[in-house]
Image 1 (cartoon, rainbow over the protein chains, first blue to last red):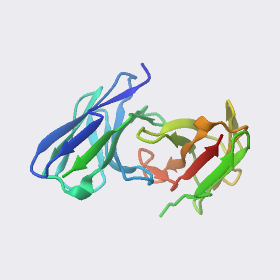
Image 2: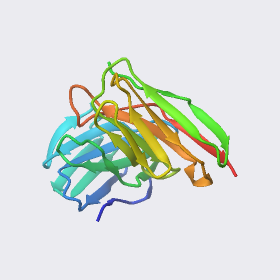
Image 3: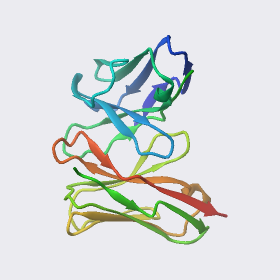
Length: 113
Length: 112
């Protein structure tokens, strides 16, 4: 299995809703990432988990809350989002050795209304 | 801070033509990564380069890690319609290789 699977593929939520994005990989990768991507821009790093511990938080607002329940799963909990948070949210994973090429999921297209 | 300057910003070519795009930086990178992103999908790693001077091919794609470690190019030969997409270069941040620095992308359109 060489895939990163993200669900849901599309999500529309109101500004008072609570929702979660899910990501799963079975490649044995021990680093997992959340990225946010706006149209025609490169991905922007949000969070990095290494061996299930949060190792990087790129000053992301607290309305985004990551969770890594085990080495295969990564969640992103969303609460009280703003319309400007609408974007493609990408999960990725990689080996924790020096070779840093990531494998990305297909993303969740999030629209906040 | 570290930046990657990717050019050209966009290209519109005829099917069958060869394509060349490049990334430059004022900083040294120890790894260069080339990704392609189709609309509505996540980026897919095309080629990873780990050694200065390295030339690597993946089918019709060829990429090189510049000898100065400050640049890389990606060539696509005999383009086909499915080559359409945005191509990004990326390299690890000097202070933490879990963070990637990204170019702004080259948008490729292929006229059949």
